[in-house]
Image 1: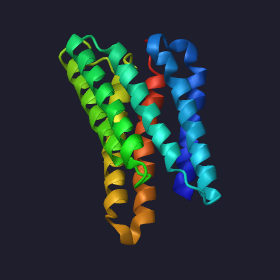
Image 2: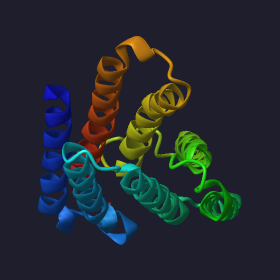
Image 3: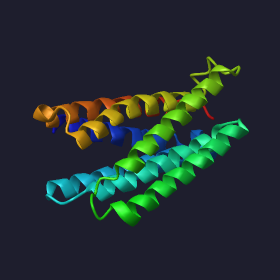
Length: 207
């Protein structure tokens, strides 16, 4: 419970910094504090449902859709490669089809949309790696201080590495004997990595 409290606190701090530095952003990056606020609201809703012993998986499905939509939009507008934009469009189409498949046929059998979840994580990893590779090939290779997307990409990769483990362990009941402890620790590490990098991105120079 303590780790979860720290996770929510870290998310809240990042949200506050996001709104304070809002004037320093331009373009699609101005959506960062809006996105973080929506994530914080959904996390609070999921927590409230859990405390009242009510099903909250639908909240995390919504969060997964929000997460993929936001990062897809972000990478679509910051990339300079035409093929990358086409690839992101294909990813968005496949993700949408997975949602149609789940809610049209699979939802009646299980509440856990593992297909869309895995696809979104896989696609976001590709987008983040592709962006970092794009930066490495450019003249901005050392522009960590004025390119928030570098920090966002690093944080996202670290976060998704932990999330992939969580999704797999939840679905296949890996480390089930210490499931709660492992889940809390890995969740905290993933949130710490993501929002530390996100906060660094928010404190970068105007972009």
